[in-house]
Amino acid sequence: MNEDFLLRRILQLSRLPLLLGLLVLSGCDVKEKQSNQQVRIQHRGELRVGTLYHPLYYFLRDEQEEGLDYELARLFADELGVNLRMVPAYSLEELFVLLDEGKVDMLAAGLTSTPLRRRQYRFGPSLYEVAQTLVYRKGESRPREPGQIAGEIRVLAGSSQAEWLHRLQQQRPELHWETRRDADAEDLLRQVAEGRTDHTLVEDTLLARTQRYYPNVEAAFTLSEPQPVAWVLDQRDDDSLFGRMLDFFDQQQREGTLARLNEKYFGHIQDFDYVDTRTFLRRAEDVLPRYQPLFERYAGELDWRLLAAISYQESHWDPEARSYTGVRGMMMLTEDTAKQVGVADRLDPEQSIRGGAQYLASLIERLPDAIPADEKVWFALAAYNLGLGHLLDVRRLTRLRDQDPNAWAQVKDNLPLLHQPQWHSKTRYGYARGREAQKFVNNIRQYYQSLLWLNNQGTDPGLATAQLDGAAARPGL
Image (cartoon, rainbow, N blue to C red; front, top):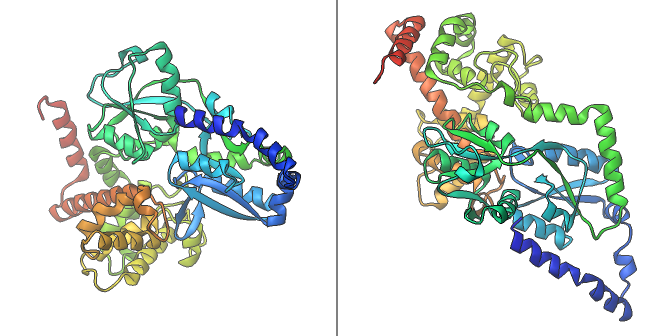
């Protein structure tokens, strides 16, 4: 939260006791308005939860709501016996205003408990912990402590990172940074990767998740001890909802729900593996021959090598692969998609490959005929990754920008708009990981071309790997 912004809000709210006293004197029934918060929610029949669109907090996939905070909030609403309504904001500052003005009952958006925030808000039990990490671009000079930071730092306006820099500036007055309202944390990491800024400050968990898309960003050093991430309540309210929240989290802890969700959304981080050409060629030599007959059998009208490229991007041809979103197997099918295509066991390679091929074919079939036949597959792959609804949203945004929604080159360039509030607020399905889908399709095309080259030229993958290793060993190549 921007320090000046928070101080203004605190000063405004500090006048509330006087105002409430005046209202009582004038005959208004303030006591009724300040009645038990839990009772009010149950009388309303709805728990209103402020959040941000984010692959960890809340997003839509195949028109289904997902996210760690969403899953827990849904369980909490069930515990209260009410419906859940997620209320997305488009910036951190807007999010806190929703709570200040009573438009939501609580916030669930990966918010860290900081000293300045605790002056105004009440934090629930810790969901997990994060450490603030300074990020730089590989190949540039690496600072190892705050005194060595040179160049520009960009952080989000209203963020805990901006608050941390304000505190650090008290010891280091020379420290300067820029706050941005037109981006999210992943945007800032991309700007570092592209050399558009020197540094950013993000949570260590986000950096670990994002390095697979921007492998040339790296942690310089950690600036803080781990900080708890928790739900947020307005401290002006009574203790009824907070008390129920404490009981709820105690129960989820005992039942193992919190451990399951942390594994689902963070378990992949320690298994992160950089995808490079040598790894791909080695797997093409050692692993692909086991599954090639299955790709050929179930490809249908698709090229089996395309199907194999999708599977490599999804799972590295690992039948037991799983992602933080809970998708599983060779083709990384969700539970809903598996049911849709008749897959009973997502970890069975044959069922997974058959189901993935069937699902991709169905997406191609559902695309408008106006899209050229030779480009439909790229549209379908984007839909495979982020859902058909989000793909249709991008086509609409492309049309709004007076571009061709049937040309993959133009739609592809507009996928990142789904990260930007000024654009995804205009869509039906909202925020989506558009850059991930963009990278997903581009990677598959590269793997596909590599398989075409290996197959058509009759090249031994092992020989190609050896050539790459030899080239890497020769200076200047």
